[in-house]
Image (tube, rainbow, N blue to C red; front, side, top):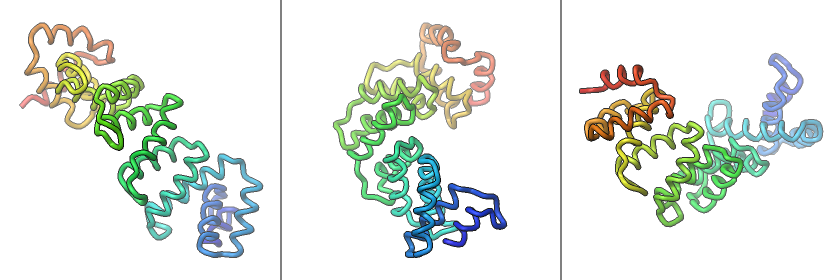
Length: 241
């Protein structure tokens, strides 16, 4: 591991890669290499803070995929956490998901909600969706479909596919509000054109339940969701049993 770090640091047989060099030096240090202690200290004194953060993320991925280092989900989670603490959004998403699923760490909904809130602070759709999921499923909080809808809506406004899907399903079933087949259809239509799996079939299912008045309303709403009626019609025909 130390030799790999040195190779990427010096460009010996490979392209110089400061992130990967630091990652291997740090892993070597963790494994007990005395040479790596000095190498890590030198790298941390020379590299900008964002490079160190990227190095943490490279280490997390190395530990996750198990291709070039032994797979270790707990170790991966610890490095994602280090990067998350430094404010990296990708790392915050990763550690939130691990805490929600108990992957490499004990399942902890409260800590997951904290990281989702940190992500959402800057208006990040991923964090907003995460909070919507937490409140919809009651993960460490009382189930609150209305709060979930608000977070999903914020994420959906930014084009977050999973949030749009969640809202469509809630509109279809009336979860957190009244059943709204018109809105459900329009959202499924938007998803269908984005090639979201099963969305075209869902749009057909909802269409078959709509009244003529609801269908007319849906036609007016389609352009506001960037849905081309002609393209949608072709998709729905192909999805109709």
